[in-house]
Image 1: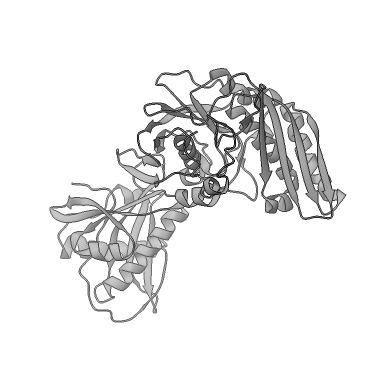
Image 2 (image 1 turned 90 degrees about the vertical axis):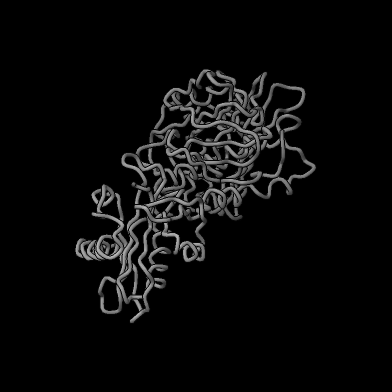
Length: 460
């Protein structure tokens, strides 16, 4: 029987000397690690006739080894993607072994901690292991959670999971305080509370306003100027509104710096074919930038119009690359697109008019889906392997970055896709009763990504 994610550790033995450090194994260390594995799992424990499998030949598999103060390999563990083929952010650890006399608990604990850190650093959002039942307590003491009993080679084991809080931490940092902060303001009005833009009462206007983080303005003023237009037009697009113009407010230490910010803003406005209607500029102050955008639609699409049973679709522009200096955090597809392509993407939600739509914000794909579900009064499940993503982006980064142009929509099963020009769309989940967001994996397992309301602003 083959069980994914086996982490097997031999009997604990007294330590004869401290280990020095844990490192990624070179070829010689990997060979020594495999010798230790065979001695433990084949010769001494009799768990396997041969403990090698396809993971040992997978170039993505990483071996970590512990060395003692003399440089000798005294233990090791392997980890890597759970399945052959595309890495969907699901990793497993396995074949943890410690040399007899090296102190299994101490060396093993260090290897497990290093494996967890390495998996998270590689972008994994799920990290599993099957552990011999006798060692469940050790792993729980290291912060692992027990999932269910399993059997490996006729022996009792426990499937365990390392809690990776990357998505929840991002949602908490970017959105969690909004509900309490905005209590009593009801931005957006009835039916649109917490939406990307706000319908202007008594008109067909929709207004949106976004600011750029001051550190980004200071660090990369041209890109900040471009993004100030991009994020506001995306907000309008998510509500199905056609943009009619933007206004800017710029703070800068001098005219030269303001020129750099405004050159990026002007470039984006020209690329999208949207006029800059006016604004305000002030010198001799710390860097700051905010933009207000106005659009028109007779029928705004709400972010909270979904209901349980609606299918979730992500429509995203997968062209481009990571913005230099923002790898893993900001995907830049828009600066390489033609005005026609940019306008086609902006018009997509208005043309399809789904039940609900939100553009993916700094809360990432999962955090934004959580906001859509929260506003709709329900929860959501995301099929991780079905999410469209660029070849140059790992799942962990893609689900937590700002993706340039990406729209999450909810609608009845079989609804027409967004006609978003160069963007790619795919159904990748559904709205469900409850709250929060779960991640569904290729083996059918669902893990918790967000367990509560994202903003606390409630149902729209």
